Amino acid sequence: MKVTTKTFLEKKRKGEKITVLTAYDYLTAKIVDSAGVDAILVGDSLGMVVLGYPSTVPVTLEEMIHHTKAVVRGRKRAMVIMDMPFLSYQTGIRDAILNAGRALKETLCDAVKIEGGVEQSETIKALVDAGIPVMGHIGLQPQKINVYGSYDVRGKGEERKKLIEDAKAVEEAGAFAIVLEKIPSELAKEITEMLSIPTIGIGAGKHCDGQVLVTHDLLGLFEDFKPKFVKRYAELGKTAREAVKTFIEEVKEGKFPSKEHEF
Ligand code: KIV
Ligand code: NA
Image (cartoon, rainbow, N blue to C red; front, side):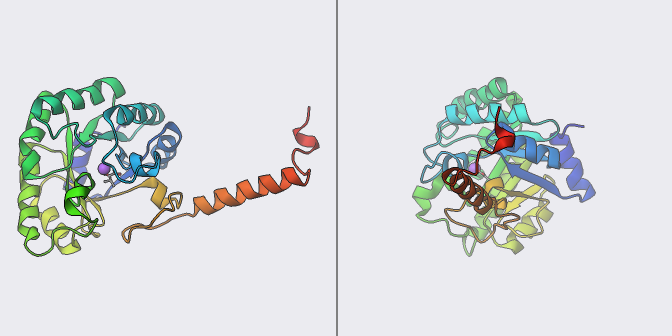
């Protein structure tokens, strides 16, 4: 059975953990979907992981739509959530509805994700009223990197109260779930207990209702840097490099192709 916003809420009620992983293409979507994740996030991390940008800020709506279409073609069961990129929703409710509406209509994804708490609550409400399910995202919001000046942990000291207000505002606006990125584990626990919608953590500790990771981090494919919250379950980057080296050697030595590959 296909995973929907209803499944998310039911899982929280039953105390079952929710798993979310990113994908940006057909092949990866097929792998994580067939392995059984609940949702596939087409994150704007696309910009850094696959397109080589220095941050998520340059990612365009066209790029997100292009990659989300490929992901939708590769999934059977998981919910597909598309990240709304920088400047596709911050400029007003009308822009947000038109752009998020394009995501749903053109890619056939199931929901969108937008970064921001209190400041985006009216937009979240308008999207949900228009029929567009929204996943919220508070704590570290990478689209605000130029304001922050660093990817440091959020919600410490004075900011703790602000984050609790943000979480409440996102739930009240009608979001079906909320990502908590890079905040203290104890704060994530408090927010998780306070909200009736599921919290999906990344760098937010084990008390969240679910966890999300960038698949290319989990697989050890993305090697530019490794955040503290990442666990590598494989070293596919190394494996791939070794395979390519062996190919190069075998071609040079005349070992490949051999008889079995000939016509
Ligand atoms: O873009 C992304 O991959 C994300 C997740 C890390 C939550 O927003
Ligand atoms: Na993102």
